Image (cartoon, rainbow, N blue to C red; front, side):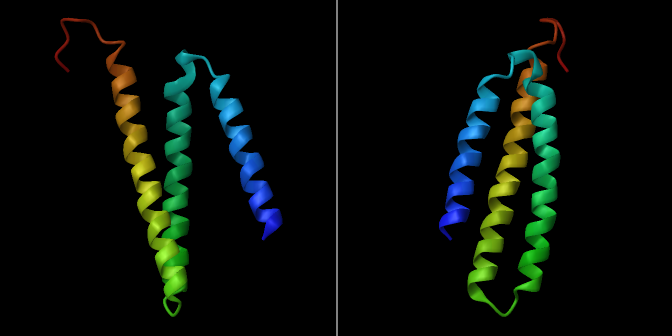
Amino acid sequence: MLMLIFIFVISAFLGVELISKVPSQLHTPLMSGTNAISGITIVGAITVTAVSLGSWAGMILGFLAIVFATINVIGGYMVTDRMLGMFKKKGDKK
């Protein structure tokens, strides 16, 4: 358990460091990749939740994983849409 916590903390620090170094022009492609990874996470969470039907803890953790990954995908699409909107001309309505 201690090793898993260590890996989680190191990956969190690495993620923050990598994202902070990305220039603003690359955030939209980066969000697209993140949305794809979160989609894979949703499929994996649905699979784990279906397999752990006898365990309440597995079902609750699977449900939370589905909810958080879905929030991440929706937020990613909202951010991507907003950033792409910044490149539209003032006269465009679409």
